[in-house]
Image (cartoon, rainbow, N blue to C red; front, side):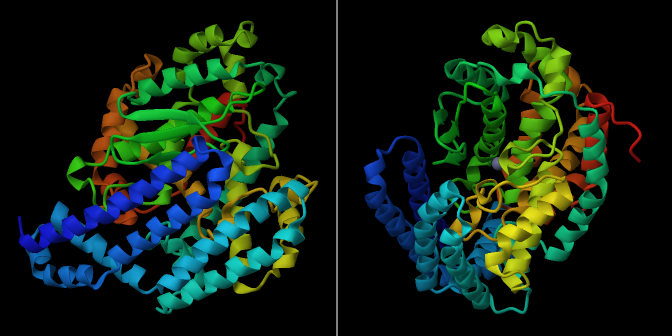
Length: 502
Ligand code: ZN
């Protein structure tokens, strides 16, 4: 191996180890840590974050990247070597533009704002959160100024989640969703009867845990390399490709845990599926937030809310939960696909979900450009909920204070949720072309071939290619809402009898 390249990999491996140790501390904080551990944990995470940042932005890394330029040129574009040098150079140049003080200040402001936001949400008092939101917005402006490359502010922020994606491109996708979804939602909601009482359980939490495990074991959860634990908010994390940590939460009166376990398993399969040749490098993770979300949404919705899936699992579900003993499969299938405008994004159905996201995407831009005064955010939020989903927001807790993202200074993140939905179906169409008997396999509870297709085409590459390159390699084009809209129309004509919508 080229000596300089070997040295680069050694240095990057150390940075990666530090980052993974931080992931593990974060996982522990959400699942195991006693509450009083929080202050020492914050210090540990700050130290690890600072050391990892220092090591990664060290001038030795820059020197090695310079010295490796000709080696990179000799290697094929899609080789591991050229890809690693190319991607690390981009990461390095970006990270070097941000002074360590600002890096630290943003992290500190976020950790201070988080409990204030939680309290403000509890009391439904936006004014309590306002000064902290202002601080996060100010720091975000300072961050964008560091990039100093003439791009619009929101384009700079999007790039942190979805490399090279522009606001104009997102708008093109979202404009189409905003045009097409409201008539679908209206027609579907009009066909709804009373909400089905059987969906309120009771469902034993232990049985939910066991059933979730049964399902995701079929997807690829391997007890030798994965865990499923409990936390307040479900998430997926990893301390290495063969150490995948999922979490879930259980409520007696709904089955959300089951869909969230499938969702988090989709994230886990992505991290688990990266080529081991890329292990302990910055390429050993999912390529972008939208791509990651495309994987979780695929397992949760395209698989987990499909007819063949429930053909297989419904009799088993009835055995696990006596509350469903008298409920037929068709009624259950319709209930888990029910479309109904509601207040809370994370509980929203597959269709209305996107309008929750678009609302946030629009408000964020107006907040950052000053078009919308921060004090007026709750009012603007409520007005847009009325306009997009036709519902009245009773209080800020269920309105502008419901999401954690702004307290963490994460502006630019939200759009990736809906883009993930869009990408998931672009990929799904390719899966269907490659696997004509996909429905039969799902109905037989067989997911290996689907998982292997995703591993071969998506997961194994890690971050070798930019998200746009990866999508183009797989589907032969850019992000396109067409397949997703077709899928939703087919779904709604099946579950809600919506047929007359153009
Ligand atoms: Zn997700």
